[in-house]
Amino acid sequence: MIQADSLSRSYGDRWAIRDVSFQAQQGEILGFLGPNGAGKTTTMRILSGFLAPTAGQASVAGYDVVEKPLEAKRRLGYLPETIPLYEDLTTREYLTFVARLKGVERRKVDGAVDRAMTLCAVTEVADRLVRNLSRGYRQRVGLAHAIVHDPPVLILDEPTSAMDPRQIVEIRNVIKGLRGNHTVILSTHILPEATAVCDRVIILNEGSVVAVDTYAQLAARLRSSEKTLVRVARADASLPQRLSVIAGVLHVTPGPNQGELVVEAVLGKDVREEVARTMVGAGAGLLELRPIAMSLEDVFLKLVTEEPPANTEGQQE
Amino acid sequence: MRGTLVIAGKELKQLFSSPIAYVALAMFFVIAGFLYFSLVGVYSVQVLQLQGAPPADFNPTRIIFAPLFQDLTFVLILLVPVLTMRLVSEEDRAHTMELLLTSPVTSAAIVVGKFLAILLLFLAMLVISTYMPLSLALIGRLDWGLLAASYIGLVLLGSAFLAIGLFASTLNENQIVAAAIGFAILLIFYVLGFAQQASGSAVQQILSSFSVSSHFSNLTGGIVDTQDVLFFLSLAGFFLFLGVVALESRKWR
Image (cartoon, rainbow over all chains, first blue to last red; front, side, top):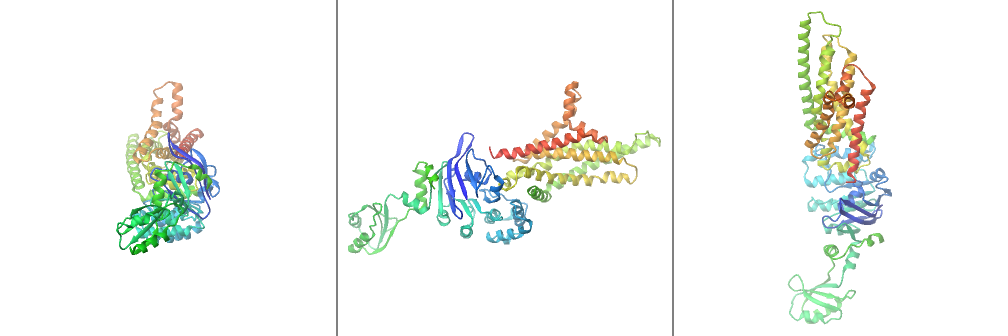
């Protein structure tokens, strides 16, 4: 549904993105992650037809964004980073204008506007001027404007940045509800959002794709050891010594809280059974034993601070 | 075409929900009204001096309306940049241009839609201004052909001016800067008429063919010449084209 082939874009002699390639399949939610200035917005602007690429090609729903811009734009809903709102129109007037602009037939406009307002929960501010709306409402009106013409492809640049936690959950549910019928690209700074909503993530750094994969696989690939957290009722100084002699254990370090230990073992070796037996044998009062997964934050930081750009991964996708 | 009309409709709604349209209309009618009032005064004095024996070419249309419309050209040079300054620069400031440029409409539809809206406002202004000749027609005889030619001239001149102002608005996201650029371009076309009087015959001909005032004075004199009509239409077309180019070029900047 969305395809980018070696997209590059320069501003003067500075490259904002270089050789960015990826694909998004029908019905998929793809997360765009990356530090500020990584090229997320530039990539989205090229896909939306707002910017032309310096090199490379991109297509939306099978239409090249440079050669057939109108066909591509007709099938696209785009929520830019700064929400494009007309302050002097009411929510309903604004959404009606957008629906007409996006090509919704005149007789279907009212229905489309009502549907978008209900989905994004802005019906109660339908007749208020946009200038008087709170930031959370403005953001939701922005999302409504992107989906008002029910496009098969959605590109959302930080859709939840100004919302409170309850609204974030609601909007995430709206976005998750679009999965299946819509292809969504979602950029976000909030990493748990990517794990909660996205099927796959693309991590961009300094204008290049450093990884494209599901979060679980990224975490698995970047893991260098198996970590297990052990919590006991009666910790004593001999426990680390007892644990470190188990076969496969690399080292034992104190955990974040009182009575906790982190056991690090070689990759692929599950030491939990042996650890449990040792703790019970020592009479330490085993309370909890669980593997520590790598958080997306860890994955992200590891990729953007350690790994060199690896464009080929994007092309393999 | 659909996109053009949708944009024109939105633009009209916004024009009348902001004070700019009202301020501009008020400014135009105060100045035009004052000029009309004083020209009628001048005409009455002349009638008294002639004491019932007027020469053959003495008619109120020529004495009141020809100079009135000439003076209105200058009023429009000041007024048009105020009307057009927000057309594109406001969309840039509010980031709504990103919405228009990522919608399935061409840059030409955006420019023409905005132009149509502001032209409609201008036409409404001209329609209201007909109270001046109509009120005079109640008490005297007017040369309707001359008036019609003058109004055709105003529509053509207004279109060209609005296109220039619209183009200026695509150049800067600050409305004041956009107005200043529009004012400067309009003034250049106006002063070309002054410069031609002080130059040699070859240069004079070139300058005169680009001077707004010399083409307009033909029309207010009652002559609807294809050359003058084409001049204003090409001026409007050329600056609308430049406006489209300015929008298109943004993708590559």
